[in-house]
Image 1: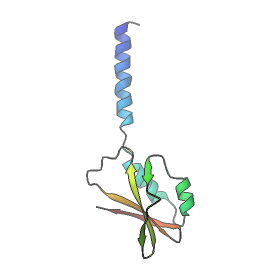
Image 2 (image 1 turned 180 degrees about the vertical axis):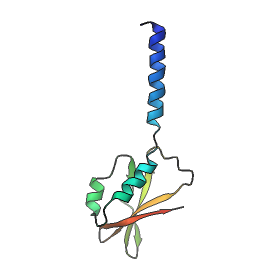
Image 3 (image 1 turned 60 degrees about the horizontal axis):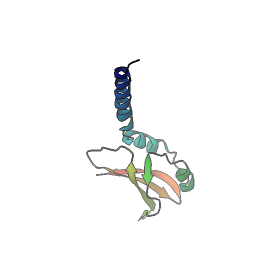
Image 4 (image 1 turned 90 degrees about the horizontal axis):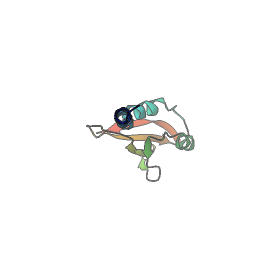
Length: 101
């Protein structure tokens, strides 16, 4: 192989890396939230949180029926609507999600 061949392969690998590293996990996050079983404990959910989501576990909103935890960051998120997503708990058990504009 010539130097020109190596440069071409390097360019191709660079393009593939850039395209794959720009993945948005927004839909994966929505899918993950929708698949959480109702009644899952707060501690179990913390242990099974995916790497592509950051949740503010230390500063929940207090609601009449329980707690609401904000999803702070979704890896690669480019949501043009700037939606806010929350995990809702009552008696330390998951009761659903909330998404607001």
